[in-house]
Length: 428
Image 1 (cartoon, helix red, strand yellow):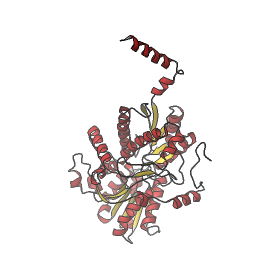
Image 2 (cartoon, helix red, strand yellow):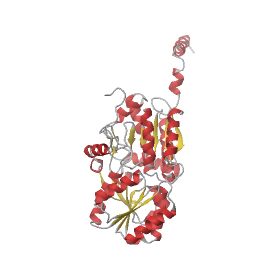
Image 3 (cartoon, one colour):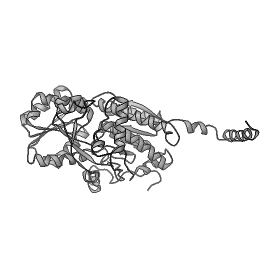
Image 4 (spheres, helix red, strand yellow):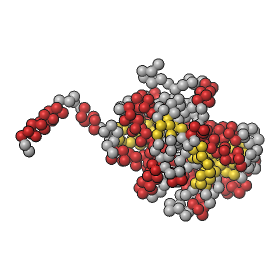
């Protein structure tokens, strides 16, 4: 090594040594992100996909240099789809683990609870699977964002299909007794014109429903003899109920509708039980191929190569959230929560599908939504993973499916909430 090079290196190392103690080390410390997801409980299948896709995104982001040059670390907690567990988890993730961002869900009650704590601490929270309109509606906060669609958007695209094929027909609702169930049933009733008492209902507990609860609810449905049976149930609750409905022969007499479907739910129930069931979703693995979404195809192929199966909508949401958080931090140039929120508001993006935008007034990701019908069992099992469940019946662009500002504001005022989200530090 030449004398000149030795001098240059000595100067550089001397300059580094003159930095304030700990600065260089801090720049290399991992950035912690908290994932509160259902590893156990009735929504565990959807939680597993979040875990898998988040792991994949984490490794890709770190291989590309992390976020602002710092590696990312995910700290995992099991929500069990329970509010009390979630409150403990989220508080610990923020106060002990010092996470810079939180995401997760698979129960709207859990997402709402997590969002409240995140707001108090100024930490951004992203809901992966939370379909209640309350999440970004009456219970929305400035630090809360929802990447998936909501109950209203799902009901909008389903209503187009159902109103054309079942006008003036009799409906019956079996509904999970919590915020997602209530708001989903309300949206379906309003948009299909089935708000009256003629269209019956039965409530089932959440998250403690038993097989006996579903048998009792479906016996009431059978006695009502509806043309359309709407199962406002999710995860293993939906799986249990739809198997019982088929045992009772309801699938032969009525159109079964599951307003919010996922691949995991269809797979757990099985192709025979799911045949001809109609539902809605914001994304499915085959949609990027049908509509030529290159980012979605790359995600599906990478996921399938790694896990020998296709991703479902919860995985797509978790994957998208990590990349959108990364992009927002880099636009803001900081991990500061308020700055990241500002960088997200009104920002449009295209990742796994077509155009989406983080709407400024409520932080809903406004996006295209899809109505689907489950294929016959013989078609499903032809697929290499036996997961080709969904035939797309139609879609609606996000600006047609989502509620507008006037409706959102009216819901907030009716609930005694301010007609706008909270101010950030430095705002009036």
